[in-house]
Length: 429
Image 1 (cartoon, helix red, strand yellow):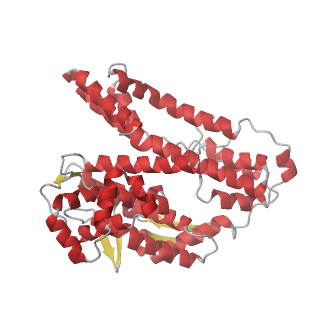
Image 2 (image 1 turned 90 degrees about the horizontal axis):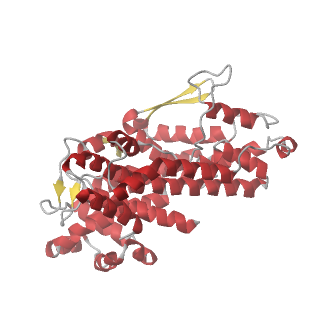
């Protein structure tokens, strides 16, 4: 068992046993806060900081200009998926002598340290409570940590007072970003450059997938009227498109990303479901998921608690489990633990659907246990091949399922995937 899991689960369990009945409500909230930290906040923090540092290094490598790279990081370009491309285009119009003479109040290291400090200050009290019992922190404080949407990719310095002439609902950060860049530009980039290129790709994706909504041409460019039902799927789709190699026509990118979504992502989401899947709609030969509806049905008040001891796997699930396990490369088998090696050796010999049926009939327990492994592998592959949002689209759609041993599979699968993600990002340096 990993150190993180020992802290998040072992310490919580020990604390629960020592608490009086009247404190159990606080304890449950604390458990949720702990899970939120170890399953979401910490892995996302690692991922965001690795992405930001990678973007920073790429921009410096392209330009050789430390001040320009600092400016791009200070103003948030290193947090954007297309930030390096935008920086490349902006640098063509930078007054390099003026920028060379500029000084900045903070460096990349200063901003990084401030973000980590802000995160730690927010969560250290909660971690202390998990080690020593509830009492000092009330339930409202704990609840705020459960619901906190801490984005480590953004600087966390205190907001400035609105400047004169700034609208009250206009954030100082956005104002500073725009002013910071324009101050050093010799001319504004033409609308035919990078930003418009990405909008044209997005428009092609919407044109290819009418269910996503409509696109209008406004005075300042395209206006996207996104279908609220498919917002999460749209975000994942755009992430997939950004992963594709540059230099392709926007229509090719739209078709290839749509193919990935419809051939790789959506069939996997369908395969792990039990019961009604009314949250998946079909338009023509394409399928679209309303994630909010899926979460409500699979995890909400009306959710059914599925138990692998009482349900049978269907043909689609048998194929998904076998194909996913067999898709793991030999050199990656050990990433999924010692128990997976035996499972992998059993499944890699199954070639025909008749083989799957026979294996399921003769060793149903092994096949059902493989459901969790398949979900972990698929989520890990989606994260590696496309990105975090695509992996989360799959994970968030999972139904509440109990393992043969009575454990909560959703929590176990999510924990394992986040651990794999953190390991991969850390190994990447």
